[in-house]
Length: 282
Ligand code: AMP
Image (cartoon, rainbow, N blue to C red):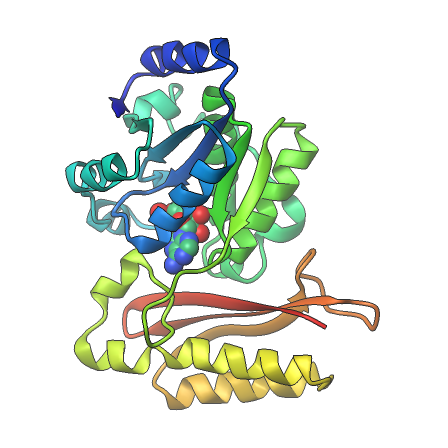
C-alpha cells in the first residue's frame, strides 16, 4: 500500500492505474478510522479495481482552531488497518497540497440550496468546506466512484448535487451507517462521551427508528412526530439541535407523492454533537 503525501506522486500512481484501465474508487476521510469507515472501504473495493483512501483533517470544516487542533490524528494506526483491507493507496496530503494559495484565497465551491440548513445552520461554512475539499480531491484523484456514509446524510446529498452540477465523472455511492450493538452510530466523536453520556446516547437512534416506524405505518402529522422526538431527546439529556422529517431526495418538506423519507436529528450530548438519520420507503 502506497502512503502518499505529494500531489506529483499521486499523479504518477493514478496515471499508472489508468494506463492499466483500472477503475478507481475514492473514500474521503478525516482519519481516526473506525468500523464505519472500513465498511466504506469494503464497498469501494466491490466497485473498483483500485481503492484510494484520503486522510485529511480539513481546517475549513471547523469553526474553531481549537477544535481543528484537538481532532484526533492517528495516521500510522489508520494505515495499518487499511493495509489489512488491501487498500492500494492512502493519500495524506499536507495543508499546502490541498490549498496551495492558502485558506483565505482558496477557490470556493458552494452548493447554495442545502448548505445553510440543519447542520449548516449550526456551523456556517461547514458544507462549503466539504464541497471545497471534495472537489479538490475529485480533481486530483479523478475517481470513477466515491463512497460517502449515509450517517452524514446532508453531506452526501450536497456532494451528489455538486458532482452532477460540475459534471465530475464520478459515481457517488452512499454506504449504510455502521452501528454499535446498542444502535449508536459509530463516530470518531463517541470517544469524547463520558460513561454516563455514552449510556444515554443510543436514545438518538431509538427515537429516529420509532419515528421512522410511525411514518411507515402512515402517520402523517410530521410536526407532531418531530415535536415528540425533540421531547424524547431532551428527556434523555440531549440538547436538541434539530429533529426533522424530510424528503430523502432533497431534504425538502415532504408532500403527498413522496415515497422516500429521511428522519434526521442532531443533538448535543454534553460537549459532543451526535448526528444520525433513518431512511424510510413508504
Ligand atoms: P469522517 O472521517 O468523519 O469525515 O468520515 C468519513 C466518511 O465516513 C464520511 O463519508 C462519513 O459519512 C463516513 N462515516 C462516518 N461514520 C460512519 C458510520 N458509522 N457508518 C458508515 N459511514 C460512516
